[in-house]
Length: 346
Image (cartoon, rainbow, N blue to C red):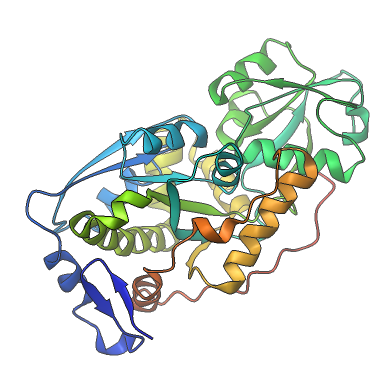
């Protein structure tokens, strides 16, 4: 089968397409621009360090946002062409009526805690997740943290809004609110965990998180041949620099966790080792099943207000590009299987 990527036809004979990078770049019209919406410099840092930016046939701008919902807003408004989000924002947006977004790239890391930590105040008598009954927990709605928190509580017979009082905050406000003791517990990210002084951990994201990250575009971008060609080229480079991160952990830790997030090298190493590294997967029947399982889980745990069929919001047209770059980098995705859910913290 032949898959059309912009104006480029990629065949399954990957070993015979050594000129793929050049052909993808040549298909991009002169003067094309791309705006990439990211979080925590997740794309802009490796874009420069890995060498993947060399010869890019478009002017590229990286725009930083705090959380997946903000990335979605930028895409919907046409202020970004490609956006990086976790596994929860797209289903939540679709359930809210958004229908102009489609995933063109999937990164997964099954079994990863995702650097999500459900933490509690020291000395407040909360020693297990079950002890959260009747207590307050801060979280950013419509995010991966929302999904993981809902899953953890559901596993222990609890739920937001009934047995546990959820305090909805912007992503950047969760840690300060916890620090001021405005809530009993919070779901925080790895860098926030250390900035809070490593408070007691009740649970992490293992078993509730596929480590799924999504490259989103507006459907209209794929209908524009020139823009679609630029997206195809960027997807290849995105796979390249993501694989570079896995092969160069110390450089990535120094550039991201230390230089940008203000952590020590040891803290960054702890988080990277705990999270592990995923890979780009093809958008095929199995990955769509996983994404649908995530979507159904959001519905079951109350993070999603109605059922959503996610298959209509993914596009496999760049699968051969992903496979070609993974092969070039010597990367083979592991089976998409979720380990047993964990009930304890770290």
